[in-house]
Each structure stands twice: as structure tokens, then as C-alpha cells.
Length: 75
Image 1 (cartoon, helix red, strand yellow):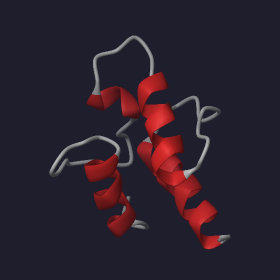
Image 2 (tube, one colour):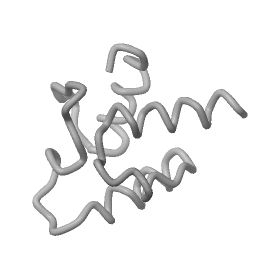
Image 3 (cartoon, one colour):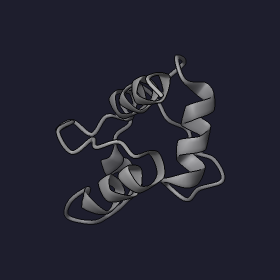
């Protein structure tokens, strides 16, 4: 999580709709909702960042943030 602190903060606000959240390398999308699946957050990530993370089965936030960061560095 230390690799992308600004992105993590932006993600918490824009995707999770929270003012702040404590997240670690073990945090996943599952920690931030009570739905039966992650589809709503996966769609929100695609909407906000233009990145498809549906293949990240673990839904670990560090993997998601790494994918977003890699996508942004290619732009």
C-alpha cells in the first residue's frame, strides 16, 4: 500500500465513497461492502479509472491499485 499513497487516498474517496479508511496489504474490496459479489465496486473502478479489474480474483486493494497505477503511467 505504501507504493501508491496518493492513489489509495483517491480510491478511498472516489470508489469507496469514504472520507478515509485504514487499508493494508491484506485489505480487499470485500472489506468495504456487504453485497454477495464485488460487481458494483468493479463497475465503479472501471467508471472512475477506466480500468477493468474483474480478473483480480483476490480483490486485494494493492493489486487493484497497482493495475490502476500501471494504466495511468501508460497514458
